[in-house]
Amino acid sequence: MVRTILGSIGIVFLGLMTNGQDPSSVKPISLETVLKLSGTNNLKIAEVNAKYELAMAEHLAAKEWLYPTISPGFLMMSYDGNAQTTDGQFVEVEKNSVWAGASVTAQWDLGHATYQQMHAKQTVLTAGHARQAEKNKQSLKAIMTYFELGAGQSRYGSLKRLVVKSKDIVRQLEVQVTHGIAYKSDLLLAKASLNHLQIQLSQAKTDVQLASNNLVGLLNINENVLLICQDTVLIPLALVDTIPAKIEDAYKKRPEILWSQSQIEGLTIQRKTTTTGLLLPAINLGLNDGLFGPYFNPLSNRLSYYVGAKWSIPLGTLLIGGKRKAMDARINLAAITMEDAKNTIRKEVRDAQARAISSKAQLNLANEGLGYAKVAMDQSMQRQRLGTAIPLEVFNAQEQLLRSQLDQINAIRDYNKAQYQLYVALGNDL
Image 1 (cartoon, rainbow, N blue to C red):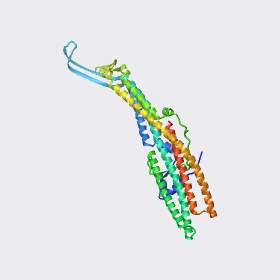
Image 2: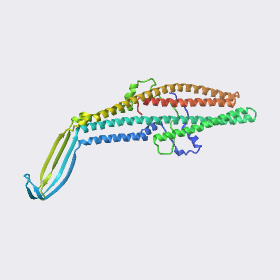
Image 3: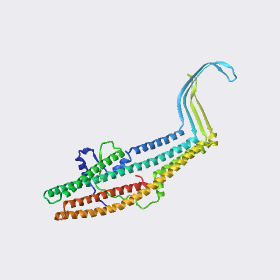
């Protein structure tokens, strides 16, 4: 595996410290920590986690129909005055009674409750797939930002070193121009190049700050901190093979497709409440048991109960079928959504494969170019020690070495980003 030292935390840290950065606000962070925090702290993921918990609660609520209602208590009744007998006669009566016990009542709409509970269970599965899809999306964003942060640090480190060397060369040229050894035009060119490098250095510092701000937001870190990549080297990662894979394999694993399939299954279950669910009756059960009798007299037990079954047949649902047609339309919309997701996934896989292949080729060229630039730099330094090369030639060689280093930094960044994009596009979870 290719390992190229592109810059360290210390260089970036010291560079920022020279401009008044509070050391306590600089926090190192690793790729492992980014993956962990993006799966827990990210607000989008927190939202889908809450939706998943809601689906779980609704699933539990859908099971409540299984349990009857229990009503313990007591009742005292008194009656004084006229009453009518069964044969129509009115008589003067005075009576009282007391009851103490419990009653149990239950009503089970089997058609609705059965399929509602099955639909609630399927909704939990659907919410789980949605949660995983959002987690992959947000984690991938955080990873992309982390690599941008690492590349920005490395660019800053390389530019910082070259600025220090360039200032030294400018001082040498100033001495040589004073003694008539070098041309003033060479000094002016060196100063112009130094200013250009300092502009690039300032922009690199800004890039680091912006990438850190983005990562702080994605990870929902409630602190005013500057994040610094803990890794001191950028290493090309080989997560997946860039050989084109079957798109169908990605379909089977991507949570977006699993979410759509689960949603269609849930709607299909819900649709059955308008068809086979009508064949199941509503069951009613009542049970009353307790002590019963007149005031201040020995009480005896009284038990009563009832059981019934009733079929509700909505003729409008059977003859017109509006609810059934509405459910069919929703299922059709869900199927269209799934096809759209397949199109998106197909494009994501192909784009990620193209980026991975291209960035791998660029990385090979960047490594080769950096090798050339290092050899040229060594030879220029040797010629300067022998007195056959002027400082400006060494300066140009240093600039070329910097460009080669930046090419390699960008190539490794793009290659790693493409690897993670392809990894997720093929249906792997983060």
